[in-house]
Length: 121
Image (cartoon, rainbow, N blue to C red; front, side, top):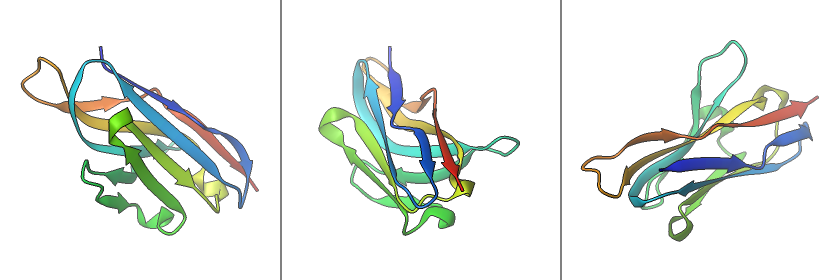
């Protein structure tokens, strides 16, 4: 059974930093893109950053220059380094992976349970 487990959320003051991690476990044949999404109360879930297996990245305009996504393919892990945090970054952050389990013909999206990030002003 494939699982994505996030860690690293918490409470931080504006201007501070946090680093989120997400590890995929289980019988995995291949992981394509991995990414981070967030959802604030009353708002839709939005893409924060994504990274392909080859290392190409994509960021939401609101986090460009402040957040950095990276991954370690050998560990099936993706990271999100968040610097210069703002109160508007407060949300639940979800890990996403487009992955193909062993024994399956196709890949699909998998989601973690999320980790809360709260930025105080």
